[in-house]
Length: 200
Image (cartoon, rainbow, N blue to C red; front, top):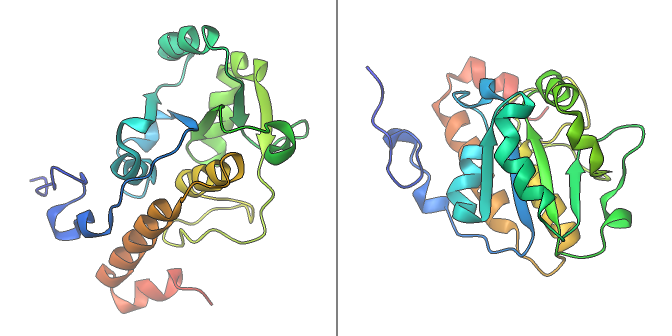
């Protein structure tokens, strides 16, 4: 039997985050291409982004070019700069590549392996400017382990990118919601399990 879900934040009622959700307003257009395996993942941060950003976040779930046909048509009709946030040998620092908030930011949501697969299956993404973030701190999404030291959750990457493109934008609603989620998840864990995720 599935657990009852809060209609506002879409998290289980016993883990409701509504008290920690504040709306975020940004002029940066954020579009997340999500691998299907992430949709039901309990620790995917995009659901939390949706709770904070509402209709300002566009989410497209898929894997093949056909899955993204509507999105491709939409992007082709835009005059705004479009950038793909994905670190690679050819990507440029975001702050050096896009100088204005009037941009469309594409993010790939999935594990490193799944995100790479999305990119390989969708070479059309390489038509856009590839950018990366210069990181000076580790991810605070400690309840989901990553194999790479430069890993950020999709939410954290979006927050840092928005802040870079629109310096006056207050992205604290994203960070605060993530902190509340981590705190609730840790509190619900048995002590022995919690020790694996808490900072050393």
